[in-house]
Length: 141
Image (tube, rainbow, N blue to C red):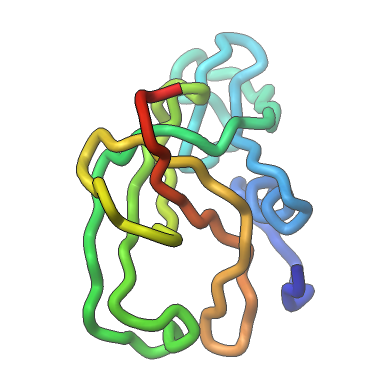
């Protein structure tokens, strides 16, 4: 995976670093065990400052999706049309992540089960680590 090296800061820095290393991880409060996304420095549930980054399975169900037919500046590397999906992750308290649908969109619907893989998406001249989701046949795992 080639990615332009740059400093990653902010509460979501570990997310991007994890993706760049081939791992999906999300923040979870060490005290109350609540999952968070977007990333936080402090738990909004119990107020603790003890946030861990835990590995999460990249699978879940489509919460929402949209098909884009118009290319936007910086997204020429994606090609059109493309489908963006918001996926609810049951193994992370239902936190939702955005990504691109890869492969066939047969059976595409809200509630469909998908599995993600970490890939890159070219944005302008930069390869950005991203989740690419694929439809899964059968019932939810």
